[in-house]
Image (tube, each protein chain N blue to C red):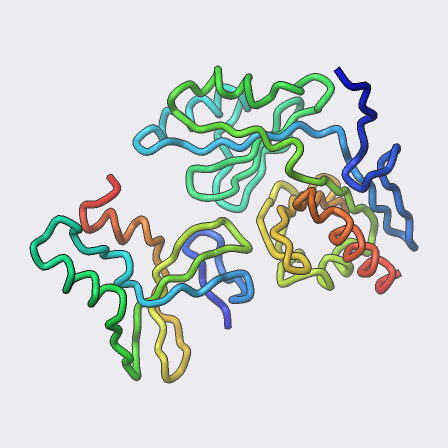
Length: 95
Length: 188
């Protein structure tokens, strides 16, 4: 499987480490009243779609960047690759 | 102060030097290294200081700035590795810290890496055996990190283009040397 890195171009998936669902970027607010339920859901609840899924990959054997990869679980087709920090910045974080 | 004898990365008194067929592999201990990571919000200032140091813009993704005495290559978003001759720049990290101030975090890297120079007509064939990197698509001045036998290594294509520099983790210098020698024997 080839992952098209946003700046380094096509790279073999062997250079990457898989983490999991991209929703892990959105750590819940630890001061919220619903924090116990929020962190339970954050840690344990995952969708398991047959189709496109957004997930985190780490370019461990490359530039050490975290990427958000959109992959179709039925075909392994990758339709989008973004830097995780750009995804976070779009949400107004880490700026 | 103890009277300690400096050893090279492969624990030899002299740098390793192997010739197999048309290929030569030379251990290069004469390299001082320091990493530079721009701090959040200071990216522009950091790039300006590197430009002042290098005399040209800081290298972009997948690129190196090959020059003397200081050279640099891109290692990640807003991160670079700077190299210079060890004899004249033993305190490279200190020099960079002074130059960059609060714009970047600098760490000493000289003793973290082993540096191998692989030269010869069959260099591309040997590199093709070593990992997933597409060495044919790299030109002089291209630099990238890749996995060689599960070791995260930097690969820099030098001038002339039958010369490649490989920086690998110093603690695994022996394993990396073994892997490169095996590839050299296979294409000889």
